Image 1 (cartoon, rainbow, N blue to C red):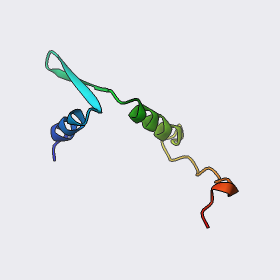
Image 2: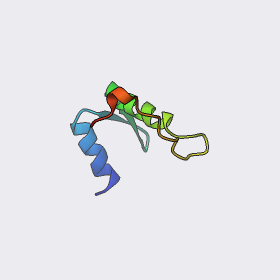
Image 3: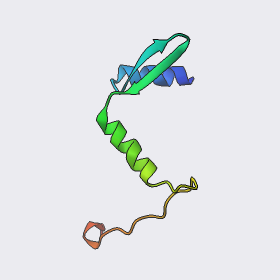
Image 4: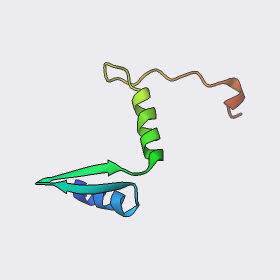
Length: 64
């Protein structure tokens, strides 16, 4: 599937919007939940680009 098709599906789902500036298409994330997820993803990446080590899970959140 082409990136154009992925973007069209995201637009139809109301997650992003698009506008044209000359020959360029500018895409904007409209859902604040998506921005939160992206922020959390980047918070787990080290400056060198590797994944940060896993944070210890509190004992009260461990499933038995």
